[in-house]
Image (cartoon, rainbow, N blue to C red; front, side, top):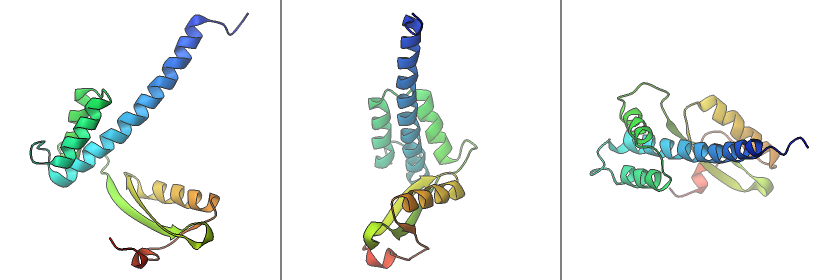
Length: 136
């Protein structure tokens, strides 16, 4: 009766749980880094950073990961710099879309968004191709 190992089931469940936790931690770390980059690393003076840290605490993110993300955003640590980019395009039926992204690799994000737009029946437009239609 192969495949009925108790340890194999535990290992599979742990792998799935760890993958979900890692994905959540990555998103929260990006939020913390961006908040520290835009408003400074002081929790008392940066409300956006305070909310991101509260979200990290709710997800049981380790304190050292939070501190590392704050230091990365404030420039104390070396690493890939995150930047916010707005992409514009047309969705199915000619619907105008704007997508705000947070990325450390502009080229990878552009190609991934282009692929998503094309798979769903849309096209990725150039700069200011639909921006004039929106009030920001």
